[in-house]
Length: 254
Image 1 (cartoon, rainbow, N blue to C red):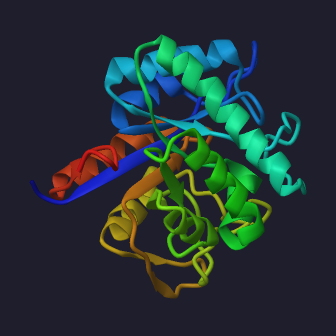
Image 2 (image 1 turned 135 degrees about the vertical axis):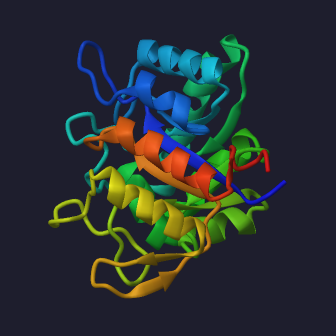
Image 3 (image 1 turned 180 degrees about the horizontal axis):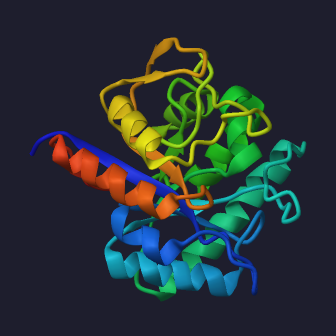
């Protein structure tokens, strides 16, 4: 088998009658789905529908726990104690697991959402309880994280599978972090940009917002379901990866 790369997407982020993203149209083009667990977004019905959609298309299912902050969509920093973080993450993993198990599928990975993810990538005190929650639930679950981040370090120290990821629709800082969403150009909705960056990331580097070239090792590529143009991005990125010889497959199926 040739080179393999996973394509993941944040999904299931609608809530009640309010719709976020185009999950049904994106799902056929990805290989792993990070499904919101009802804290920052999602609800039991949305979770069940998204799990069913992933099962239909053979897409690996991951829990996407975030801060309990519907109004802020989980993108506002909130300080919790280590025990609160551990239990908050464990609670959300368990909620999605119950729905997935009832549908006859198992969980594949965990990827924190939004501010929880960003904080855990730079702060070991935030990363550690997240990793402990994953390990307590199942050491077979992978943790999706920024490469060379605190979250990756903590996952590896706990003996978990850490899957470093790159973002096709986000701009990068020279230190490998993502440009804050409050800054111009942080989110790229042009499919051509996402495709170029996907191919570059898969090859081991990324051009940062200031023009510097940063080396990055990634095993999965992330796109966001709420990015404008997400459907076309998913189609184009998948097609471009296949065209240059990649086998697009969930990160644990290489």
